[in-house]
Length: 434
RNA sequence: GGAGGGAUGGCAGAGCGGACGAAUGCACCGGUCUUGAAAACCGGCGUGGUGAAAGCCACCGAGGGUUCGAAUCCCUCUCCCUCCGCCA
Image (cartoon, rainbow, N blue to C red):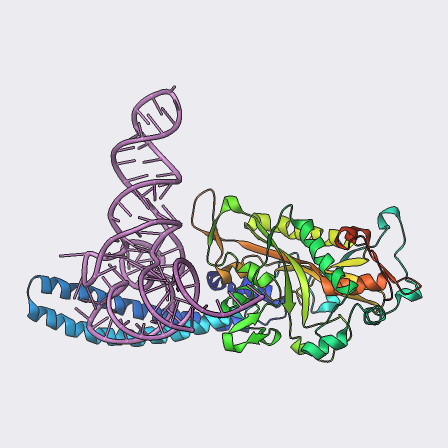
């Protein structure tokens, strides 16, 4: 969430910044209004409280002096004030809760560097890459045998079985089998191994508490998007960003320990509630998929470098897999609520003739850190400061799987996989008809 | 799942109804001493809210309650430890 002090002192600048996201500023006015009332009530409560406390001390002193009569008199006064104080406290608490609820749904301020725009169509393509581009190869065109959607390739080769997935869990829960299942596992291991030079591998829980999803900004606003296990009040994580952001929740880190870099391979669960009926085929949009996440807690000064490091690592994975991709700089209208700046990576999928989002690399400034209360003690002294958080997918593997089997499809229907995966596939880089 | 024991500042650990935001030790930061360091000694050393400031308020796992007054008493919950049962 945003800093309430900043909203008070720079309300016009905050509104101006949020206007770039298409907000009209009324939510800021609402917070300011509530905040003024909250502080008024708080002051009243605190002064009553202060008086009760000093009277209580008088009672103690009188009793010690053996003056029971005086003690009883002061007690009576204090009791009356105490009742008043309780009322004031409830009033202050109620409106304080409103302030917090309102703050929780106000999105982050976009970075000044993020391009302006209203929606997806205004995102800025920064660059494209394809195999051989460095040697001057032209942007690839694709053969007819590559123009087969992955769900058909998957069925032909018995490596993806959406029907059985649906039988087990309902539609949009994929089931990989045989060489397809092994390919998915290979991709995850390959990605994790690629980052162990700088990132600590973590295997976090797959379910998380409400607080944990609130810390990243997934709650309260997007509760429709996440699976909830009501009986135990646990949410299925929509991304490893959720548990990783809470790894240090409520902690104060030493500046010397920053940046803290973590990576995790987890399943990700999404209800896709707003997307009913769209992209229902194959792996374009599924309720469960595996993803490797790269994550860092940083000082504000380290954030940009950490953000670019994750972007570079995600791109490097795509290049080593030989996939045709593009990098988008998301416009202010398309950036997620918690982020200040986001780059998306999209892979070209010849079988469905679309660019598929396989990574989203975001800088959250202190927005999530404030919600999660993750701070660091500056080495030069002074009070604790909020860290910055950055993260990015590296990568969303179901969609990569889809692109690989389409791009790698040969004229005879078999699929050729990239060389880098050889160690993870026992040297079997070809998938052919069973 | 059953039975017990815990949770206090960065760490360890006292306090168990009034002068306690909290003893003491360690760690840490200044200073004295020293050629320098160590030791010793002196001083400092939590977080947040509110206020122009002085100050005031909150926080002893979390949430409720009792009381003039709660770290301390009561209730609920969470987590940790020990033992038993069950289990991949």
